[in-house]
Image (cartoon, rainbow, N blue to C red; front, side, top):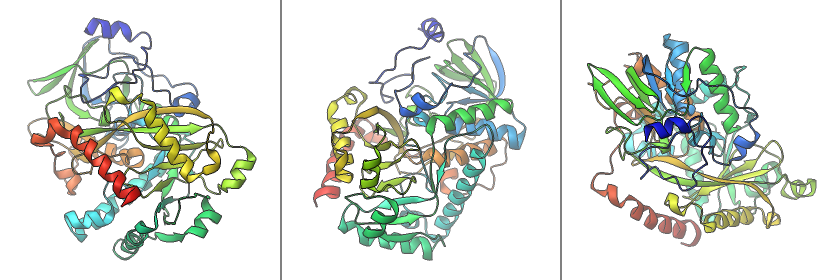
Length: 466
């Protein structure tokens, strides 16, 4: 099997639309990218270092070459003088980092600020807010580097109320952001949404956050790749980690082309974390599928009718939320949750459901041609918050994941925080996301998808009917 994987690395293997990280022992090697708008429009892919072809000794091995893994490599080099080796099963940023909606928001995980307070109290919640605000500053600084040209569309984020009944809760969250966190969010009425942002037919009002940005997902990842390699990191593609063991305190990572011996290991595989990768990450995440589509470019008449005055990220207040925006080339992108299993991902009903979401917001687009359609796995943790953590004090092993669909921005900071921990400089990181492991689903693990099926139906009732 390993020889087959190594031979396959020389050419792209077909994309597997039914891939499911709950069951697949590894993501394969050298598989083609998902057919995303991002990959199709990113331009030539930068060079990487090719597959591992022999046994090698490295200081730090990073498993996963998405935003988090590459950010970790960048910050290990920039801030700690450590040149890491990144191991990627397929192509660079093959997973979450080239399948998302390209929305950078001032958040991490699925919980709102009010829920932080309920869980941890006001003092910890305020420190969490400082961490997230610092992360956005870091993200802005990173994408200003000459190696990274990701079509940034800065200007904030609009959280749109899709029903009147959610307005009181949205207003309460806005007051809390201002009063407790000193963050200048504000409520926007339906008329202002329509006149100053976009004529979303569902909008009953919105909360505007000053921080938010649209980016080109693949250009961001490829920019991180260029910067990481410029700083001395090695990035080996078509090199899945098929097994690992520790000998004499050194991690031995088995790839199809050779053993990578590393003093420290960082895991940054997010929604593509295979159950066989490592015992400390097995079943610590719930991979959730998210669908995304991109339309043909809108006509001048369509843009005028929809009054798209903004290019900032837009999300609605559904539990199974829609995320959408106008892209720089005049197309509309929209995404939402999808199938429960990889086997069902190709079912046309999921695309139809997403299209109906688009039509509810923009009725004149009914029947519009869709030029790109794809899906990807989101890394949702059991308690809806990410972790950057060293799960076993006896091992130099770290992980950063669990963003729950809000990792485009925070992954840069998560990679930096993981680099600090590797370098032995993470002592001041005392927030819960740094001091506790990803929680296990425990006895419920075999039944997670049955629970997901039930929750999806409950969320639909709550969002649309009750």
